[in-house]
Length: 153
Image (cartoon, rainbow, N blue to C red; front, side, top):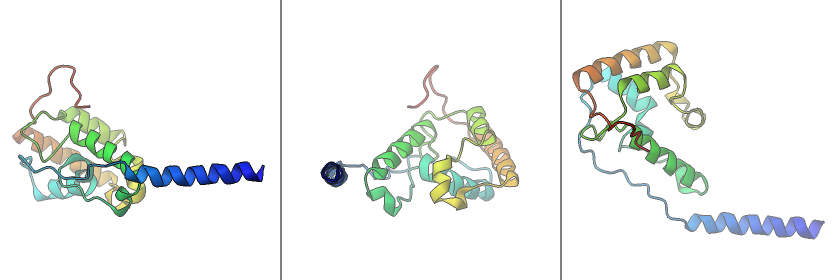
């Protein structure tokens, strides 16, 4: 029994070392057009709670360089940028109603992001302010609509 546990342990270590060799793209593409925010306050709240995944200005944390977390994190960020990207407002983005729904239903920011980024947790008052700011921002600078049925995945 001990022999099998030792072999399993060695195999796990070898796998963990081997997956470090999988390339992960951690680049921040250039900003092609930032959304025109309604106010500096909205921009600050969005940067604090949203921009690491929903902009091309991601701050890659140290654990973003260690697999398997790096793979998971890169996938999250790529998906987030694909749905809503405040740095590529000249491309199709998620509509306001979806953004508001995600904030109101506590689906954004993601719970696992908040574990490592407690500063991104919004109070109820901040959520209300962010939603109002998004409403004003999207009204004055609406995103390009996605084609029918496209979600940005």
